[in-house]
Length: 152
Image (tube, rainbow, N blue to C red; front, side):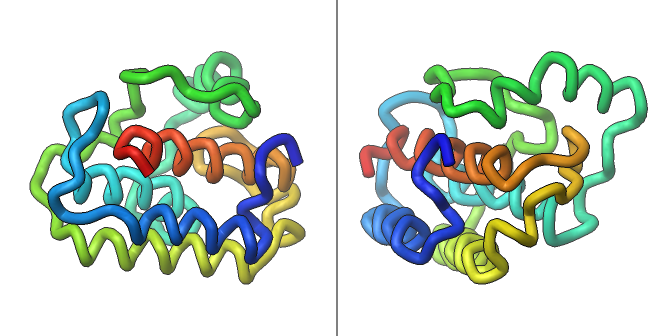
């Protein structure tokens, strides 16, 4: 794995420990989201795996995503601060901190229990089939980016 392996219990629980350090009054070092909105934002990546809440992009948009965005999302290179996000990930309404925190922790644990082998070759909502390493990088890097945004 390029980045710490979110599919292992040790790494997943380490990320959850960081999430548990957040409070409803945690403030970001950059960006405009509240901590509850950030937690909801992080849930979107998992919603695209486990629910049908978000429509799949059309053929042209999938081509653009695979050709120009995929490498940035699944590589080990960190996201820059204040980078643009996809429309599905924009959270503008108020969210409940405890609800979003529980949802995110549950998604992280469910993913860890399923394991990397379930994700190896699994089709991504936006990028087509991904290796377990690409799924790992996508999940871990996104969480790490936003937890650093809030100082944990």
